[in-house]
Each structure stands twice: as structure tokens, then as C-alpha cells.
Length: 232
Image (cartoon, helix red, strand yellow):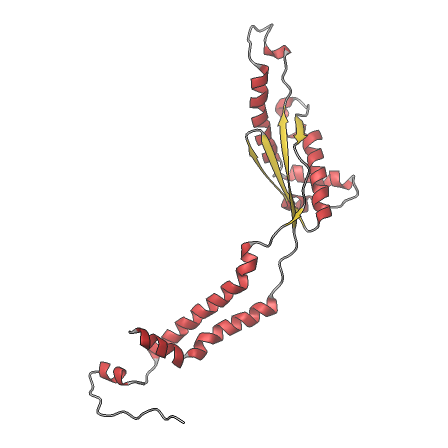
């Protein structure tokens, strides 16, 4: 099939090409909802245990560098805090902490609003909510829980809290819409056009009529004359 024949088929069945796209555009516009506004912030935290000079050597005859083990412990604690931040227990603690500030946010909502990551001795909490006030309150409550209630995540520490230090304050910004929300309607239109193209070629393939000299010649018949298209 030559390129010219593709063009002829599209011109002949152009209504089938456009109909799916028009329907999808109409439905998309009728059901379109703008992306919800979302504010985000990130908090960087560091955590460790202070070096214990008394346990570095002496009675047992075993000696080690307390500063080295303090740095090493920091990495383990930060990794544990990152995992703890993803749990329902942490979300519940943050929710209760926010209640002391007269802010009501369920543990489920808190869990959906917080994610975490870490690298070596630095923990990062990512916060997101529908209003900047909620993000700020989440930042304050999360930091307070991390600093004052982390013993709940570490039975190895015998009930004492590791030292957690906030390295910065939450800088609340408006999050840009995700890529999916921005190209959703465009993808629908493209899908409609693809469906339209498939319909055009299906109609062309199933068309029982011969409409051109070349189609007749493909049947092995000789053409002895043509009726020209009427032109006004």
C-alpha cells in the first residue's frame, strides 16, 4: 500500500478518524478536575549517641576510640529512624503531638503525608499536605517526636533517647503538579487519534466497493474507461 493510498483512505474515512478523539476530548473536559494544591517541605536531621569515655576502656582491658563508635552508631540510628518514620506508630505519635498544638490530623493522614530517606548519618523527612500550615505543624511535630520519643524505636538503648538534631527548618513551598496530571488530557487525545487511525484502516480493509482504477487493476481486470468525478 503506497503512501498516497494511506492519504486517500484517511480522506475518505476522516469522520472515523476524528470521532473517537472528539468523544474523548468531550468526556475529558466534562470530567476534568484541576490537580489539587499541595505544599511540601523537607527536614534534615542528624542523630547519634554521645561518646562514652568510661566504656572506652579500663576494667575489661578492651580499648577503642569512642568517637569512631559514636559515628558508626549514628549511621545505624539514622537508618532505624528512617524506618520508624514509615510506621503507623510514628504517625500516631506525630498525630498526638499535633493535638497538643490544637491541630487535628489523623494518624492515617499523617502517614500519607510523611516519607523518609537517609544517607549515612543524615535523615531526611519529606512532608506534604494540602495547606502550608499543616506542613509546618507536621514539621514541628515530627521533629519533636524524633527528638523526644525515639527510645520507642530502639530497645537496644534501654529506654534512653538518642540525640536527634534538626539541621534546618522546614521551608514550605508549593509543589508543582506531577507530570501525569499535566499530560493526562493530551494522552487521551492521542489515544483517541490512534483508535481513529485503526478504525480508518479497518474500514478501508473491509470496504466492499472498488473506488479507483488501481483497485480494479489489482483484481486482474482491464479498465476500458472511467467516469470522472463530477466537479461543480
